[in-house]
Image (cartoon, rainbow, N blue to C red; front, top):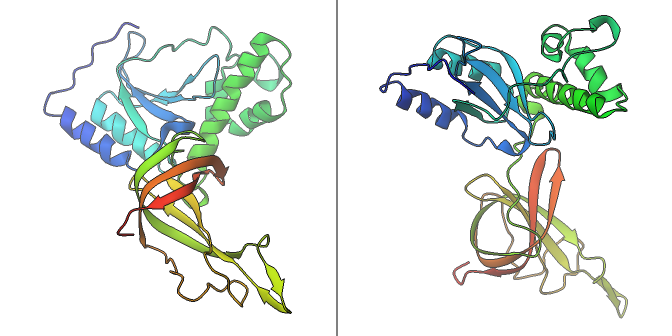
Length: 281
């Protein structure tokens, strides 16, 4: 792509990069990210784009023009992303900005319109295309893919943060070994191990496990179970002498094995087992 050669003063670059660094804290690009794109030979303006990692044909979509200078454009993009948990980047170029006509509506009341213009005036129609439109040919599938990306952006920008969970990252791959984990407990749940519950001479014995949710310093979530070593006479009550884990308690793990990855309510969890705590734990 050829550029209009925008000029950003050297003293302004650290300010912009600092704002982006602060803005992107605890934001994860797994589900995509927004881009402030430098002006090109087609526009004097900085423009706002979105990258969809799940898109096969057209991962980049154009949203709208920003401002004529970089700092104002970045600030405007940040205001637009007030409800988003995705990061923002400043780029000189992206791989492709042409849809080759795949974004043009060929039916209905918006026949001949581009998806981007419909996104601005009637996002519900975009939602209908993304959800209900039946794509039969390759070009129709590319068209629907673009509509789904625009709909994804609309939902991301309009859904308030309080209804979202920070996604985090999966750690490694199932079967891999992790070492030297420093975690902080965020939730503790007590649960009977029903496979071990036993009745001896008319007395019921319980083995009560502690199910922990914890995070690392990067905000990634882990699930682990501390199995009961001794039995208890009461359901959901730890046996005498068992350490009772508490919220905000620190965990130092020498090694653990990744059992599986779980995604629930937009939050990614790494379940670990075969845990060896450090000696001072």
